[in-house]
Image 1: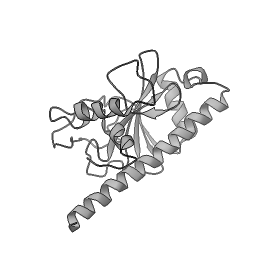
Image 2: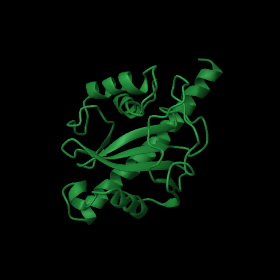
Image 3: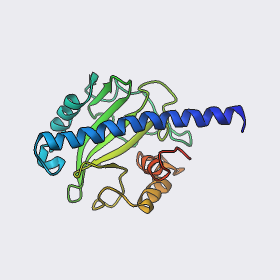
Length: 198
């Protein structure tokens, strides 16, 4: 292996390690939220509005900065893996910077039988580069059952998603050559056992 390849692999694994840390914290927070509210799922626990989602993040995470939109908490621009500018996500959503330096954008967006509750975008290193969707900037969904996974175009899919559903989203969204969509990268990382192989 060449030195540039080793550096690339190291950087990718660094992004995944930071992502895994936030994933674990969010998984534990979702479980605590349900337990604290004596509920069997996140909806029953009270996660039913954007304001409830914001309160959830304030209660269970060390938030060092809150932004009314992504503009002050995230980089001004993101690119796809292929290099095109990405604009397929809502920058108006309220965002937070965590003590770890990660930026999180959360939006209450239930779909289907209310299986998916939250759309979450995370830049694991905040405004620092490379600001590439699928590298340091990843989207995932939080489901009613408290699980965190990717999202599919079938609104009736529930977490955990199948390997096939995740692969399909990666191939048609994250890895698509056309204007990049924000879904599909996280599922590929899950399928590949917390490795960024793309």
